[in-house]
Image (cartoon, rainbow, N blue to C red; front, side, top):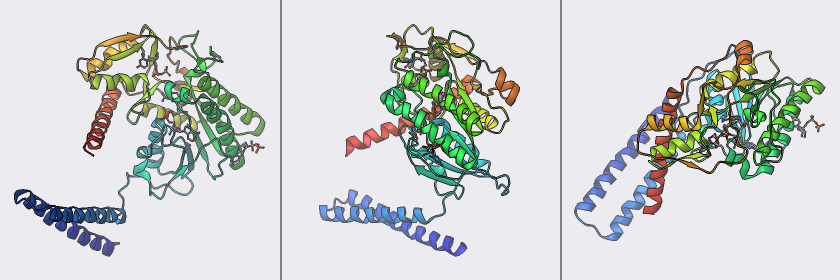
Length: 395
Ligand code: NAD
Ligand code: UDP
Ligand code: UDP
């Protein structure tokens, strides 16, 4: 290993030196104008050096975030479906750092490799590109089933596929759990309550969902997923956990997912109009992603098998939320009301008594703290996007 490291350092030094000499040559060529063939030659040399550096990078040992060493008995084999997505990639980080073996399955519909690239190559990590509406055969102890588009524009983009993912996909995960005796946690949603007539929403409320509206592919898909979970639990003794997740935000949210958090932050950062759909009197309650990850892991490892709400009960009207974002970001965005959207739930706030009682869980991250982290992330993403656009124009 040491010899390899030494050889690598020498090679790297040689390449860096060549770069330096080349850079000087290019600089000289700028000062003493050279002819085209000389410049082309220099460019070719640069290209070849870039490719050598890239090859060396591949050879160099990759640095991974720290993980715990677990004994054979405490180490679990964990499957995370939708693991390249926003929420699940944070869950993967936590499970990996705890020292478990994690397999991510994702079809990259809304997820991205960059959310998990820091684990690629780690001995405890595996990535499978796979659509869960097709059967999957792996051997695991636990399954966190999060694969499904989650933002309204994403799940409405291909409603039939959303239904298939949440029904056929869930059957496959439950079938897998049954075969290998794994425990499975299903990521359900506050959308199972629809446009609720009970406020705040507790887990005993059956909901108020339009079965044929634009949100039904997701709402009914998740309701079937819950129904399937309890059918497999009763009939096949599969151990199921059901998390009803309320609006969640944080870094790695999709830049263009059309959700209120990403829209408002982007709009405020770019001094564009902040768009409120409808009256702005509708409410939501926002939880930071690390709180959700805490709750999911506690639920998976608890003995509680009925559905549990995971959300932050601090409720805001969308109008208030627009001002909160604008105040933190600053800037001069006007806040403008637009036409409302069909079947938009008017009030949403989780009752989290059950999570407190059975999991000892309640959210910890205040909105302004979580939003600052998220805004930082979006700022960087926008800088990267703008850089890409500039380089495309230059090409
Ligand atoms: P996301 O879109 O960022 O992640 C979903 C992931 O699932 C993506 O990586 C996507 O590529 C993958 N996926 C989708 N269909 C798939 C398929 N057929 N096969 C394999 N992979 C597939 O969404 P998110 O916000 O991280 O949500 C994750 C889960 O949590 C979803 O099940 C969602 O319903 C649930 N949830 C999220 C929220 C929230 O506010 N973020 C609220 C309630 C419930
Ligand atoms: N399944 C899977 N992986 C497994 C076991 C099952 O993807 O390891 C799928 C299987 O293809 C089936 C579904 O899960 O379509 C339900 O399986 P189950 O055993 O409940 O029912 P059956 O195989 O009898 O349809
Ligand atoms: N919303 C809005 N402006 C936007 C995006 C969303 O006013 O640019 C509203 C939307 O109509 C809903 C709330 O914000 O009332 C939350 O929407 P989101 O899509 O984030 O999630 P939902 O909770 O509806 O699934």
